[in-house]
Length: 106
Figure: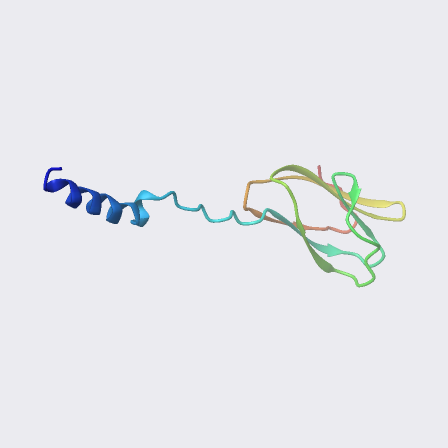
Protein backbone atom coordinates (compact mmCIF):
# COMPACT_ATOMS: atom_id res chain seq x y z
CA UNK A 1 0.00 0.00 0.00
CA UNK A 2 1.51 3.37 -1.03
CA UNK A 3 2.34 5.87 1.73
CA UNK A 4 -0.03 8.49 0.38
CA UNK A 5 -3.14 6.29 0.54
CA UNK A 6 -3.87 6.84 4.28
CA UNK A 7 -3.45 10.60 3.83
CA UNK A 8 -5.76 10.57 0.85
CA UNK A 9 -8.41 8.65 2.82
CA UNK A 10 -8.11 11.07 5.76
CA UNK A 11 -8.44 14.06 3.41
CA UNK A 12 -11.54 12.57 1.77
CA UNK A 13 -13.05 11.80 5.16
CA UNK A 14 -12.48 15.40 6.31
CA UNK A 15 -13.95 16.81 3.11
CA UNK A 16 -17.05 14.64 3.40
CA UNK A 17 -17.97 16.53 6.58
CA UNK A 18 -17.74 19.96 4.93
CA UNK A 19 -21.03 21.79 4.54
CA UNK A 20 -20.21 22.98 1.01
CA UNK A 21 -20.39 19.41 -0.24
CA UNK A 22 -23.91 18.83 1.09
CA UNK A 23 -27.14 20.07 -0.43
CA UNK A 24 -28.48 23.14 1.35
CA UNK A 25 -32.08 23.37 2.43
CA UNK A 26 -33.97 26.09 0.64
CA UNK A 27 -35.81 28.44 3.00
CA UNK A 28 -39.57 28.06 3.04
CA UNK A 29 -41.24 30.59 0.73
CA UNK A 30 -43.21 33.39 2.31
CA UNK A 31 -46.94 32.65 2.47
CA UNK A 32 -49.16 34.03 -0.28
CA UNK A 33 -51.92 36.08 1.35
CA UNK A 34 -54.94 38.19 0.56
CA UNK A 35 -55.51 40.91 3.15
CA UNK A 36 -59.13 42.09 2.92
CA UNK A 37 -59.97 45.35 4.71
CA UNK A 38 -63.19 47.34 5.08
CA UNK A 39 -65.51 44.32 5.31
CA UNK A 40 -68.84 45.63 6.67
CA UNK A 41 -70.44 44.11 9.77
CA UNK A 42 -72.87 41.30 8.94
CA UNK A 43 -71.38 40.60 5.51
CA UNK A 44 -70.02 37.33 4.11
CA UNK A 45 -66.58 37.04 2.51
CA UNK A 46 -66.05 34.66 -0.41
CA UNK A 47 -62.80 33.76 -2.17
CA UNK A 48 -63.28 32.05 -5.53
CA UNK A 49 -66.92 31.31 -4.65
CA UNK A 50 -66.12 29.66 -1.29
CA UNK A 51 -67.27 31.32 1.91
CA UNK A 52 -64.31 31.95 4.21
CA UNK A 53 -66.12 32.41 7.54
CA UNK A 54 -69.36 33.31 9.24
CA UNK A 55 -70.87 36.77 8.91
CA UNK A 56 -68.53 39.38 10.32
CA UNK A 57 -70.01 40.93 13.45
CA UNK A 58 -67.52 43.77 13.74
CA UNK A 59 -67.37 46.26 10.91
CA UNK A 60 -64.23 46.98 8.91
CA UNK A 61 -62.48 43.92 10.27
CA UNK A 62 -59.27 43.07 8.42
CA UNK A 63 -59.10 39.45 7.34
CA UNK A 64 -55.83 37.78 6.36
CA UNK A 65 -56.33 34.72 4.18
CA UNK A 66 -53.65 32.31 2.98
CA UNK A 67 -54.27 31.48 -0.69
CA UNK A 68 -52.50 29.69 -3.50
CA UNK A 69 -50.58 31.89 -5.94
CA UNK A 70 -52.62 32.88 -9.00
CA UNK A 71 -55.88 34.57 -9.95
CA UNK A 72 -58.64 34.94 -7.37
CA UNK A 73 -62.08 36.53 -7.09
CA UNK A 74 -62.87 38.27 -3.82
CA UNK A 75 -66.58 38.82 -3.06
CA UNK A 76 -68.22 40.48 -0.08
CA UNK A 77 -71.98 39.93 0.10
CA UNK A 78 -74.41 41.67 2.39
CA UNK A 79 -78.04 41.05 1.53
CA UNK A 80 -78.60 42.09 -2.10
CA UNK A 81 -75.41 44.16 -2.20
CA UNK A 82 -72.17 42.62 -3.40
CA UNK A 83 -68.62 43.85 -3.87
CA UNK A 84 -66.45 41.85 -6.25
CA UNK A 85 -62.83 42.26 -7.27
CA UNK A 86 -60.62 40.07 -9.41
CA UNK A 87 -56.97 39.97 -8.39
CA UNK A 88 -53.74 38.09 -9.01
CA UNK A 89 -51.11 37.26 -6.38
CA UNK A 90 -47.55 36.13 -7.03
CA UNK A 91 -45.95 33.43 -4.84
CA UNK A 92 -45.05 34.96 -1.47
CA UNK A 93 -46.93 38.19 -2.20
CA UNK A 94 -49.34 39.87 0.20
CA UNK A 95 -52.15 41.59 -1.76
CA UNK A 96 -54.34 44.13 0.03
CA UNK A 97 -57.98 44.35 -1.07
CA UNK A 98 -59.94 47.32 0.26
CA UNK A 99 -63.71 46.85 0.11
CA UNK A 100 -65.36 49.97 -1.25
CA UNK A 101 -68.96 50.19 -0.11
CA UNK A 102 -71.39 50.29 -3.01
CA UNK A 103 -68.66 49.56 -5.54
CA UNK A 104 -68.13 46.69 -7.93
CA UNK A 105 -64.71 46.39 -9.53
CA UNK A 106 -63.85 43.63 -12.02
